[in-house]
Image (cartoon, rainbow, N blue to C red; front, side, top):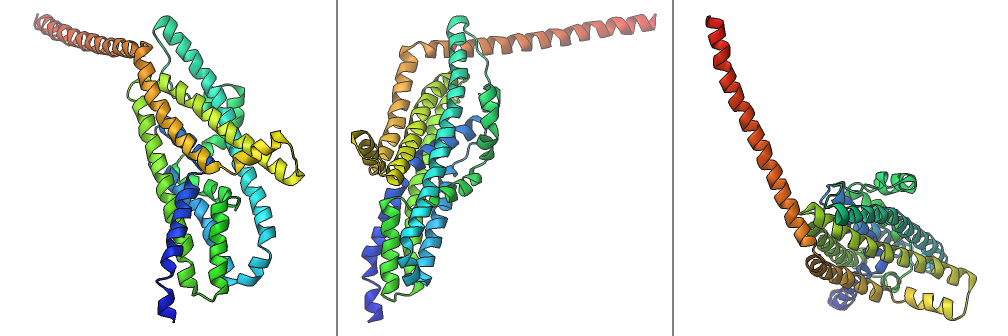
Length: 345
């Protein structure tokens, strides 16, 4: 009978992989990946693995939980409610605090960008800095240590681990439930652990693609300093809205769950928290839509002409530098014979 049970697992395996694909599009995932990808790129670190490390860190907790359920199916199943309660509170709090802090940091970055844009419009010149948070005032210095912690893509792994403590989405609960059912049926641990691995591969695929997609859209802005400044304004504003919105939704969701709050206002946030997949799809679409609209407005707003002027100015300065260098070399050649003649005399 055992060989006949293995083919029947294909449906469950497909479900586990689909749950991973679905979970990767949760709004808190995308908000964290997109913001960190942009931050690393503006600091000169063009990494394509931000989403991958985040998903691997997140999946680590899921795999450990599935393994624990498999090894102690009955005990963990009976106490899963308490585990989910504690883990959900930790994961949601970490996610909410991280996103709100990122949103606050980006507000001060946005202020700096606005000043540079006003200067660009008035004088045609600007300061081509990387808009590092350490140079954005007092609040920037306060939040700098937290934001600077993620200075390479692999550091998204521990952040993903913290996010993974949640167990607060239907996809993770469904995967753990599937694991518990098969564990109680006596299925081998080697077959059961295929499910969380498939879940991991599905989530890693989507989160990695999201990081690469955001990297490419952001890279378009870095080709030219003026384009960088303009697009930085657009995308930073969008990032602030997304990060603060998701963080606030998660905070209010905790309040609703723990304080049993009711009413139209609280029901609205409960509804939003139950539709994070839809919000995640909207986030991806909004970044793509913003990128297309930004390119259109960039031309209609006359920023492309400023870009041409900048290129011409840089080329003119380069020619002048070469001309000055050439003149200096010629003067040295003329002076040297005179010095030789004086020595001969």
